[in-house]
Image 1 (spheres, rainbow over the protein chains, first blue to last red):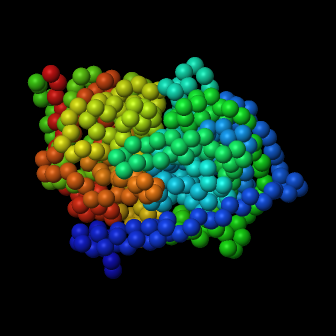
Image 2 (tube, rainbow over the protein chains, first blue to last red; image 1 turned 45 degrees about the vertical axis):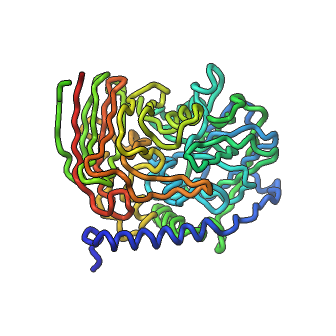
Image 3 (cartoon, rainbow over the protein chains, first blue to last red; image 1 turned 120 degrees about the vertical axis):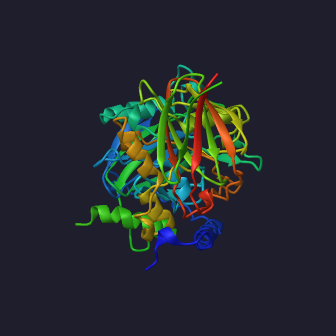
Length: 260
Length: 205
């Protein structure tokens, strides 16, 4: 039997390099075409608009889909997720980028919890860019104004949670570039009409804030963020459930938690 | 300079200590290429803790890098200085890739790795001694770990570059609880596929 604690360094390296090669091949493939078909009004359970600087605290059931639209091109929207059935399981920014070998979170990729499970899939995306390295702004950038950090904490508080429960977050609609010297740069506000769609893969608590990215030179939101919630279980040929080997292993862990 | 503590942390083991402002912790990579995962908490209110995003946002806005180096100030989730890197022989330290766990190992390396030791096991063991648990496990620093983010967005764990005896020095800026996991990971190159002991020296002027 293979004893993974007793391989040689060369054997461990070979295993790692095979995984890395597969991940690079996947990343080099063209992105999935955005599915921007309008939702049929009959399928929408709830829709709403978040004014600049404001936030919502939402509950999603497994396989609910939330389509988030940035019609004005405001510079970012802050997002944090918890497993509604065990709030100690929550969005993990480090695992999300490390497990998928990329900081480019777009259609096909998934948002991981700290438990090796998928919290949400990115089922559609117009490609505005989403950043989980630097993330939403905080009072250091906003001063006394509304900001992502405080709004995510306020949304957490509506679920009975505290600052202890809010970790590194995701800033949607935030394109960040990394140069060869290792500096990160804000690439400008997203195009008006940018859209991203997330499917809940567990029962979720969702904090969504209409506040800018930390590196946005515009530190106040400039327009509304709209969202619409529907329910759409994945089909046999679902993009996210087959996109990467890492994602598939994450779904094995996720589905196991829901197995009867 | 008074040495307050000088110990060797065995390969794969956890460690923790509380520093007073001005005290200096030197972490020595005795044999080279050993990742040292670290968490930081305000010793008086542990709900204030290290925040990688606050730290990197402040660095990026002043022309700094996506990694930590000499001069980096590690900020809390309240944007306050916790510790400062005052000396470093390695050149860069990761704070984006998080700490390894049994669960994330299954995703990254396959389910056959699920019972292997991991940093988050070390952290949970050590957090328990302070009355903390999984909700307190947040973003961490990976000293001596080489995690490039390439212009195409790729994020990988590459071979470490720290030499035998290489070190990093942290000066406390508040009363700070430091938790360390001497990383046991052998499925990526962060420990040269061979975890080794580290030495931790705490001193004050």
